[in-house]
Amino acid sequence: MLQETLKERSAFAHQQLEKIVVAKLKSIRSQKDYVELLKQFYTYFNRLEHAIEPFITDEILPDRAERRHSGFLAKDIISLGGTTDDIPVPKVPEINNPVQALGALYVMEGSIMGGPIIVQMLKKYGITTGTSFFSGYGSETPIKWACFMESLNKNIMASAQQEVIETAVDTFDRFAFVLNNH
Ligand code: HEM
Image (cartoon, rainbow, N blue to C red):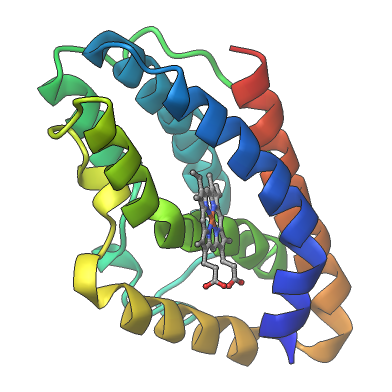
């Protein structure tokens, strides 16, 4: 099934990215450091959302308007006294069709799964506010994930599996690059 293949084939890229995010979290010493990390997430997620936007229609993902988006990051940044004005424009994967858009969205939606761990880690470093993005859908997460995967399975034909996997891996790798270069 696509779900298992996608998870298996992108596992290494996920692991690499996770290591970078964990290292960044561990180096947080102040609220200002946390805002810097939020800004790195914002720059990438916001740009990627714009890239996939033309392809993720209501028909493909009926509840797309209710899903988490980079606006949560902007809200968190501003609530902590930061700004999104001075954000660089990162390179995101090239998105030219709904298959590639779903591959990128798989990475963004899946990142909600690590959210509770990130929120716990932040607590350890004294950060308890400005965490709406990482809090994701809370107890609704499993149902939202199942619903997203259903849409992915419905919209990706067997012949397009390779393309969705490649875009997902590219989405992980480019985010790792962005985080490593800030
Ligand atoms: C501290 C950093 C992170 C931790 C600890 C973490 C942890 C996890 C965990 C525990 C899962 C659930 C695995 C399972 O149920 O089998 C998961 C899934 C996932 N994470 Fe992360 N994650 C982190 C960062 C990220 C980031 C930054 C992204 C993407 C931007 C991401 C993308 C994904 C995806 C796509 C999945 C779904 C895999 C699947 O079931 O197909 N994660 N993560």
